[in-house]
Image (cartoon, rainbow, N blue to C red):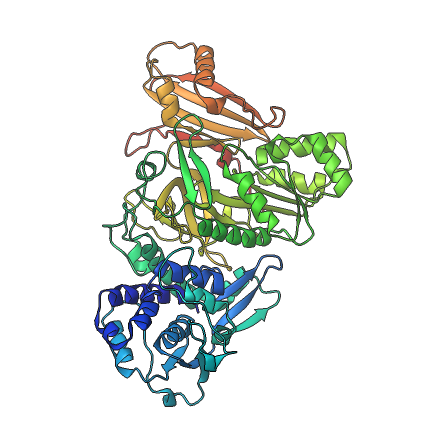
Length: 625
């Protein structure tokens, strides 16, 4: 069932073709034609598959988040469909074929089925819709009788029946959804429970060839889903990952122009569901990130698997100090993810105090903490001063790199045995995670959720090992989708025994993330100092433990009052101001304005350009041999 999304695409095309083809109707009664046409609803078909078979993005596996293992769904094999009337046979053939079986139909309406076969043969689809009218050809086929949609006649009292549907609408059940909840359809699929096999491991065990097929099908389903969005309507529709690499790169300006509140060109206009998060610079315009309900649920499921892979285990007591409020995603998403796991969560957010941490550790035995390095450094240090015996077994962090020397400090001072980083994008959620052997800023990629490419300045892919701009494509987000989106970071793909890994090398678009959350763009500083005669301006940031210092290097022909400029920047830029979202004692931050002589900043020997942003926090990373 790895190709179920391809089969949904095929049936969508078949429904469209039959809707415009009158020949099949002439061979049926008006009631029969109405029942068959009521199934021509691709959106309802997809919803039925979600509810009846599970998360389409995880298939052929059903993921059990509470146990971190899977059940594999397999087609039964050869199925012969029979039923009282053509509509019942039609429903049976659709579901038996959708679930990957070889299908024959025992029917007297031969001309109807021949018309259907002729229409299907004319479709341009990846997986053709095929069935046989010769049940005898499959001697070992399982015979499946499909119950009628209408109420049973007097001579059929006691036989199973499913309520009819003559119109499309949310108040009227879609028959195939009811069928998938009905006993007759259970025989179409074999369910094999794989105890102890996680979704990550199941995908890995399936092998590279299976993954390649899976990613190609993800490409096709993504473009099937977004083909009617105004922005994507007239763009090409690649059908493999190889062709996908020629699709246009999406940059921040275009994404912003078509995202709320500035535009809706990447939205479907469907019934609003799910969650909305916020993205953008703290000192500038905000852009909103809508997730449909299914998009959101898929993100949570994939993130739960990643949290297990990062070292959380059943019974952990997890203190969550990520940022929350004002539509920021960290605390909101992680709290919902942890709620799906067999762990006990303490959702304190960024306003946690050292005293609260010590109390919760003493009262409940908290053994794990999630947060950003700069906050956790001070929080844990202060907790140790309050209680010299304070220990913490697991530290899961994100938002910034953490020096290897400070990780040794965690192990030595707190007895921490699990220290793992999670890499995520503000717009696209999780990208990668660290396993026990990974160090620095290298993360295993979650390619079944966010596909990562590394490209040059022109958007062309570069070989593995070569650094370039990071693009992400979210295979599982269809409202305001991210397709080859340039997130503004630099990295390179490196070889890892467990799959593709990304070495994150920092920002590439003039953006600095301060203290793991506050976003500051180079252009914002330039704009704030527009009244000052400046030749070149460079932002440089470094960290010593939890102390971060932003240095604004300026070349100017005139003597400047750097202290006055510092005060002006702090007043003008909210990202440089103290925040009500976190205790001041936990995050130490300073700003310096330094005037340099003309040409003092290093220039690129070829272009003569000055590097706008230097994130020396990455350069401070140490390695352990």
